[in-house]
Image (cartoon, rainbow, N blue to C red; front, side, top):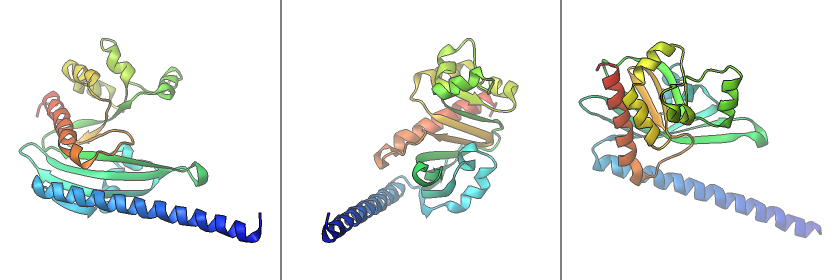
Length: 223
């Protein structure tokens, strides 16, 4: 290839990269605008950025202790009779160089006074988790609920309290629903789907799912 031809290839590559960056920027800008409009419609407050929260969440929840380049965006906040609600996009990066991965998910943070949850983390179980269980890594299973035990990895230091929290009714509910992630600690609960961001028009359904879980956990914890 001639020097001129090589230069054209480089310019084309750079131009393509610039287009991708521009389209990504526009997509995120439009996403932010749509969430802002929805917040106005449903009477929730809106903040474009919420990075200041991260340091206060890192010590409570495994989700925020992973990776680097952590960012919280598109924060919608409100309050009901039973809980303070925060909904936001959260992203972080793991690995380095060509092996780096960006993880993005929509998250609901629910805080309910009077609720006292043991620290726990629940996520859909995969083949690597099953292998880990055979090697002795913790997975709290329920022999009378094999569907739940096969579907989810449940971990936490106080296994006795966690077993009490996950009542028969809650286990049956989780067995039937779409796979989700839950992390609890004290009066706070995180609800999200691993590496999945909701579309703006899915906000109502997403929030209803989180509030349903909160209600069941409140009942189980005596609130």
